[in-house]
Image (cartoon, rainbow over all chains, first blue to last red; front, side, top):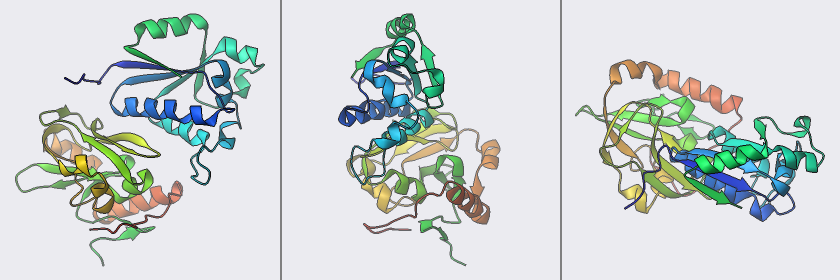
Length: 127
Length: 156
């Protein structure tokens, strides 16, 4: 028997960044799928995943050349789908990034927040 | 004047009622139900569809809530209902061949049949006829949406 997805919470943790394009699209695609199924979806960017959110970075990543679908497109589509994007404050500092370096629409949270989010999610997907 | 005018190659039948913001349409049927589907613009933006999952019969939906999810290789998202009501029939054909929606978004590719619950007040938010075409033209041009391509044929 299938589970009714409506209203459930999914937390997606993304640890990969622009150096590994083939690990960046799918987590966002799954997040959008979950949002389309009326789930509450939050993507948490940490470790190398943080650099996806640096202004000017995601536009340079096009997993399938010639497709016109860049990583920036994926991030924008996710936000339009009401997927919430959050970034780890400690990771930002580790990579010498500040709020001003981030694309619009991303909030910064600390390490305790990710633990709260994980505890409150119905399912966590880790990439 | 054509009953099926085009904007950048995207067909927009005058007889339907549109939620331009959500790229959806409804067709009012004689029995009081309404068919709901994606517009030509929507199927073109999504590209060839790989999966379509309509909500089950009996599901009640508020206006703006999904009546289906659709997926292509590059996009996945909801088909938001232009009206409130209960799903009374789903198009089984699109489950096995969702590209029907690409080829025939306004006929064979309808998605669900809804029994409206608040049609009278909600119809005001939908556009039809030339007003719908004009509103869609404004959206297509302001967002610079790509022209519709019907490489696998098209049924209006």
